[in-house]
Amino acid sequence: MTKELIINAAPQGVEIALLEDKKLVELHSEKTDANFAVGDLYLGRVKKLIPGLNAAFVDIGFEKDAFLHYTDLSPMYELS
Image (cartoon, rainbow, N blue to C red; front, side, top):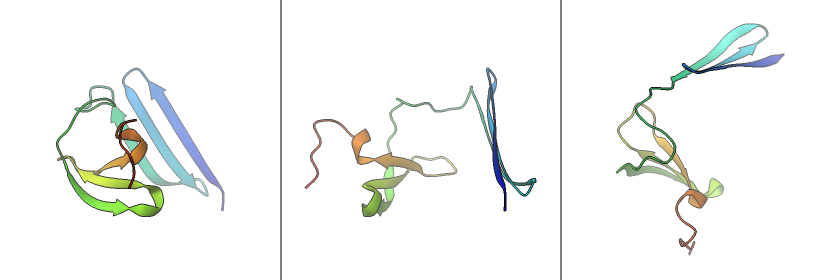
């Protein structure tokens, strides 16, 4: 099975397509005028903890839950 990842980055947004044996399997599209950006602050509720990844999935009100790695918290945060 051959896999291809095609990325189209333009000022209007980014489109990512995953092909398997030249057939489209996944298509992701994000416009630059999206409602969120890296660095924005959100109030959310932890939905799932993933100890093996030191991460959590957080419901912030979008269709998909946000991914939060412990290193994204703060340099002052200590794991116990």
